[in-house]
Image (cartoon, rainbow, N blue to C red; front, side, top):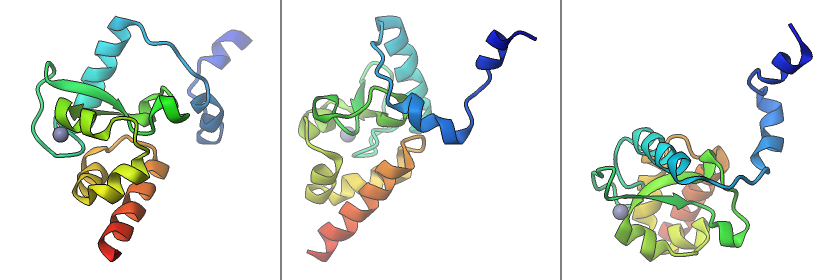
Length: 132
Ligand SMILES: [Zn+2]
């Protein structure tokens, strides 16, 4: 086996943090594939309001907006309905979930493949919102 083949093996968990920081530019067909995968991973629901979603109505949302330093990677991508995506706009997840804690609760339930750090942040925002 050549060295080249070795590099194709999946990265160990400890090395994923490095890959996570790499920014990729998505082609339209890659985007559709990502949307399909995200829709399946989120149990075909908007991760914020939990409405059932068809592929056509689903929009890809960067939980941590790219405009505010978020990564363009699958752990930061979820599906949301258009109204929730517009309502969230470029708010940071902590801002959004503190304002709409119900969205944070749904996010924890349905964004199954989102980064654990994002889910922990969502839980924290929900408890802060309910404590206030
Ligand atoms: Zn929604």
